[in-house]
Length: 563
Image (cartoon, rainbow, N blue to C red; front, side, top):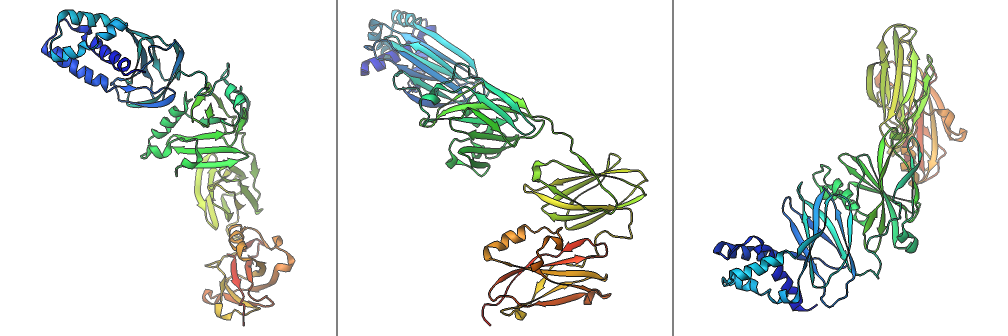
């Protein structure tokens, strides 16, 4: 491209556009020309074959231009504009000029010097009529213009956002032989919903021609959210950034697992990459699954509407094309089965983390007074009790908890249990009308087991624990463990399990004791026959008159290595 050809159209167009409304050269018109020419030269050149990010300020138009060489035969070119937020207005203008007129472009310099006469202005005004709009669009969809280049032509792209500051991407190419920056969409770019469950939705879509030709460089990525569909990947990224968080850039949606932020969770399973973005309005989940065109979205909430968008992504350029989004509502969760409680019978309930909404137990009173007993086995559990549909108790269970309620015979109590942890929880529940007969044994002030370091030997340890004022049975069990097993053994302890869950070989002894004076209600036991330098896990079970066991907190003790 010659230097003369590059600059003369710009100077001519600047002069022509500014003189469109001029009648004669005046001081003010010359000043306007100078200002307009300055602004024009501060427009930007649009790069050929490269995606350009354009930032727009509200109500301030922005122009880009490109020039095609004069001696070049007409060739097709494409311009793709991707709005990343609000709808925008954009247009393509073309200025076609003759060589004779280009030779006159230097008159703009005479205008600046103040020696341009009325006839010169008239000639420049005539040049204005050669600037025509060949395409315009308003909206937030991805649009592509395909045209044929003209000789002696200058193209101007004008962008405007009237709603708020935003950004877009623009891609111009005149090279149709080296492939496409953007992956191709199939003739039918719709996403089909082929299966709906309570927590899953199965989707399928037709293959992109790019995925069939370049499998190693193309992958499909699925975006799942509860708000609406997105027309481009950068629109989804912008929505996440402006979700009301104080640090919006930390929530940017990224195709690269190496760019994850603290608010993002990455899951890699079966060659599928899932990124979950925690945003103000919920979750935006992204799953990239290679070139598979059928996918079942797991772990959804029942009776919830989700929006699904599929993007075919060029891994080499990071450019993407969007399929037509769809939506689906998961099935409503069936009413949970209600188990009936019977007087004095213990029921142990296992809750599968937060995924399981509620577990319900029903009890019909035969007396005015009822007493519920809850023993937390593991995890954390929230209990809500309603009587004839009205809430009468609600709290988190810690250890052992009694709830005494009053009502009328035949009142119906509904006990609803919910895990407040991601992992599973368990709780034991009992109900009885007899206040004076507690279901669980009387508990000591502490359920800790104490060991005496000075009394440890190579083959024995001495432990102690508190008792109560009630005659009860205490059974001691031991288990040999390794160093790397300590954490797991203590974490997985089920405090509701009784001696029946232990091996006979782990039993050390059982004994009865009590003391009316709580200060003296303590007992010790020396366990012998142990191996030197070995870790042992000790458990004690307290069994009261009702036969229901309560487990003390496990204690790990290591025998001396040398004596």
